[in-house]
Image (cartoon, rainbow, N blue to C red; front, side, top):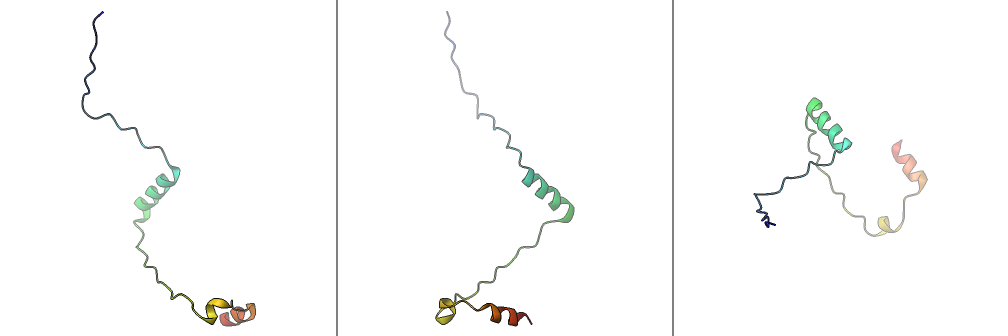
Length: 66
């Protein structure tokens, strides 16, 4: 019996990526509509003192809208 020598020939083949329906839908939407504009997040100052300790009452919240 002759011994067989295996010689590596370059890099192994990559497996195809797992299909993701979410990524496919988003890619399709980008092609049709275009890339969404980047959004800048505005940081609010953290509440300190009395505002942080006590929540606003429901009456005040409802009256602010009017």
